[in-house]
Image (cartoon, rainbow, N blue to C red; front, top):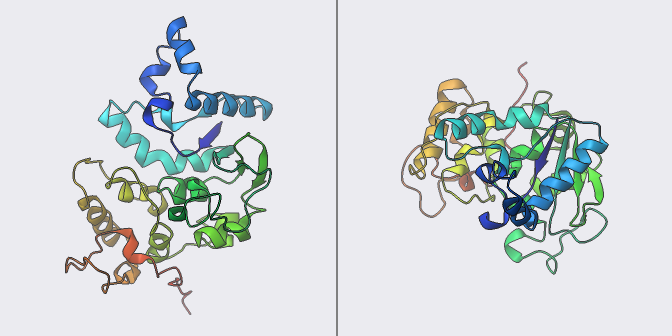
Length: 268
């Protein structure tokens, strides 16, 4: 199967699970066909067919978010689903050029994106970059503009993720907890809990989703990591940052911003 990685449009421009069920109705089908989100699904299906793949998974329409049990299962399984995909189609909707951006372009991308496409600023897309073996990037017009392995050097510059992780995966080189947290430091999510939930797969952690718990989700993640590992880099975050609550646990991944050089040492 193939899988899509993308930035969501506004909810009303995407096609949700419950709406896909209504496609048998001509009136509903016509309404959905006009949405930008439907065009993403259609283009991705065309690519999957060209690659002789029988299935495509898209988060907007393949998760029933009305079911808390299904949502929890999906979030806890997401990294594995991206890892097992034959192809990951990454759609950069704001890239107009027919080549991958190799330098910051403040005139093309807003200042809060630091001169790079929006996809690189989102929390969920971090695991969607790391997990799949075969990632192909597409521009606004769905022209292929490169793949993850060939673009590893520039992707490392953008994300601070080491090229060897991008090329060979997490199994070949296991980063420290602090280093992984640093990759997420400046990424944003729509809901504060997703700052933690979007990291579960990168750490191999499974835990229930409790939307409404706020920043406690990130504390729960850290407690689970402390229980599972003996990696003390989890305590290496910046306590000089404004807003520190006084806890031994960090309140947010942004406090690990300067930890990208904290690496595991081989014994001996």
